Image 1 (cartoon, one colour):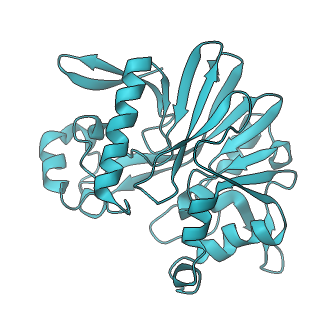
Image 2 (tube, rainbow, N blue to C red):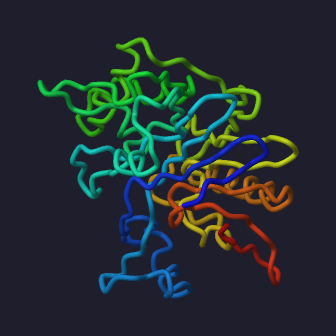
Length: 278
């Protein structure tokens, strides 16, 4: 995938892994409608459809900033292991080239490469020269004992907690600027502290949306919230607002779960919104 320019900012999509999803698991309330209205999206005899886990390397103000860190190489039920390490290498990069990691939220498929398992089984920071920037609201929500002590979310102990132990995480608040070109955009619903990353440089705009939307069919049906949305109604409102703004500003749309590279623009065609890839 060619690099994407937004003014002085350069964006490189990095595929961690493709995967297939079952609509009955993913959007159980709307699975039958999905399969009936969008048969072309189904690519598997079992009725599965493809999505991606994509991370975005953003070069801005002299730094390499990684937005989301994928699923990682640990075995996770329902997920193939990630290959972000290969994607970095294929683009002439190493983990040590990353200056800052920004996690849009703290789900396991967005934090996986924060750490890797060391020879003794302990969690080692994968990006050894990086700091992390995470929303305080998101951190406080997921680091509650009801999550960290439940055994259901091992990635919190493996991939999130070690950042604080190592003294490498700083906390941000909603619309805070990251640098002169990048800003957090509050987008709650999928999780309480979910954020997108707004990019603006030389009059051009882009947005990295994290999990505010998982599939282009949500352009037609923003209320089709996946089972992973913590607050489906709020997530739907957030999606509508982001779609409205992306269309109005002709901003580059970067969606980590849409088919790789998830980069394009949302445009009006015949009374509906359509995604056109770059």
